[in-house]
Length: 275
Image (cartoon, rainbow, N blue to C red; front, side):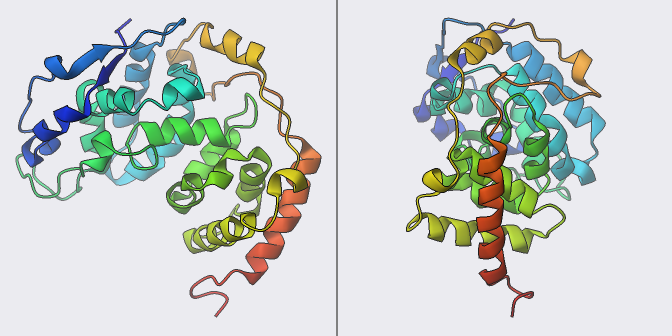
């Protein structure tokens, strides 16, 4: 099992366009630090899933790979939310552990291998969780899973406007809201997702959504069991893994939020639709 590490932000100066294009390979050793938790983090399983995604999906299907990879990456990288909030950890993942995946997923599809133009943007290696190539998948799976069920997370990852808008807002931490959003936006376009996210975020400034859709807390015992459980990546190449066995989001709370979101959606100015 590879050791989990953190990368200091001062290493950013080495992340030139040549590095981001894959034509330069600096030594980052002096910027790395070991990260140790009370439990193990199986980076080898995560590497297996990353390699499988790059094999399974063509360049033209890179966006689709998010749906497959997000839940499996979360299943393999077992961390608490507090641990996953470490920006240095994700810098290490993007720059040292999986820069090949970052380039595969985010570099321009029409560039030549030696061409620095069209290389993956810096934020995909070291940016915030909403932009980082690996962190965004882990956090989407964490926030959009329903207890152990990753199905809603896969549905959310299939709509890039959920990833680019709703995921970045504070309301993404309210489980009844995100579960309702996945249901309301099923089969709808990215423009719909964008408009609804803005409408819900605006409404959250005046409505107490956590009072409208009352959630139940996550289960610390379920988290501990998951953190220390066995991981078998090959078993889940075809079938969906399970996340921490937290309580499901209360159905009544989801239904209430579905009603609210549907009302907001009707009133939301979707460009090219509600005009």
